[in-house]
Length: 226
Length: 226
DNA sequence: ATGTAAAACGAACGTTCGTGCTATATAGAG
DNA sequence: CTCTATATAGCACGAACGTTCGTTTTACAT
Image (tube, rainbow over all chains, first blue to last red; front, side, top):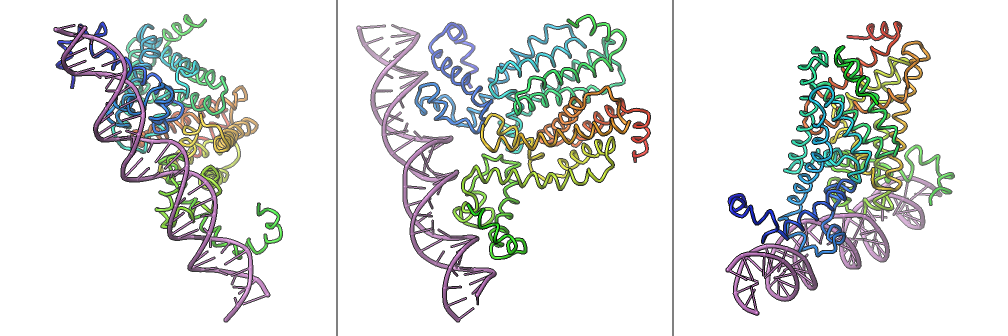
């Protein structure tokens, strides 16, 4: 809704113009909220609790969002930004194809293990919480997870095009399997705190990549082992 | 608190004696609760809402459990019974070893698809909800999921002993992978409602079993294809 | 320095939550 | 049929929930 104005005010906004303070606070709220929510759930996160954590009033905080649902959507959006920054961007520095596919999985597992979100993968938790709760929050979560699956799938296709993965191989199927192994590792780690979960997932993914790789692909995988 | 008395009254209790009505009601409450909880979560399920569903008073219902936490534990226990009845027992009619391993996975996927629990696998949902919420509920959920992993793992070991699966194969690893694929299918189905999720999981498990099977094991798998 | 719009506050709203207490209804033993 | 243990209901509680409102504080453009 502020889009038209954005174009005229964009210069002053960028450097901390008149509307800057509100935006800064909003960002601080979301930063705190996303971590609490990843552990306690988007519904379990309470506005009062969040306000307490930030030493501000419930009403002052609430004013930044019209409703709790809007707050939840904003949290999801923030989590997406973090996910892109921490996983997607770094992985896209790897070369297109097999290498990027592996890097995507590898970094994903690292990002869960590192505890960037207190409750493991934010979206795994959010999806489980909202999968039977229709509404814009659920829709947005489903959309974002689709993006992730598509990214995996595209990496498979590109690896095939580059002659690194066999062509008689359904990209959707492989994306499903890798995503499952990642979610499984996340799930096991959250429940038992066992770091081996990640190495198990890595082993499974690696084994699968190797078995589906062409000769050229295998050479590539071997070259990047450290 | 009624433990001492139980020992003297146990005979009459068994056949539906004086304390029967309470037990019957309790069971009816849990039966309803487990389905609501699988969709809305153990915390999202409210005592008032549950009482309304069963056309009884909040307090009357509440009297059957000392606290909400006890109710939650009882719900988890009920879900476990259902899981045993619907998955474990049927699968244990298959012969020990490779066949049972496959049957366990196959029936598990079928049980999620059939919608026995409204929100998919009860324990997947409960584990995600409680994994960062210490307490007896979380502990019990973790324990039950351990049972399931152990069951899968034992089936692998038995298949190895029977010479149906290669011996250079970590049972824990395979159990992890199968569990992940099942959770992945459940997750995808809940989020997108796509039945293909299950066939994808089945394909992945089948492929893996075939590739790890000995000659004898492969013969066995082929014989049971329909 | 002043005016003004944005941002934060404090108090209160109506609900709903889990949880007690006390009384009534009911069912099975004698 | 009566008695008594059990099961259910009614009512109220304090706390916490999301949300609204009118006021006060803050920060920036002029």
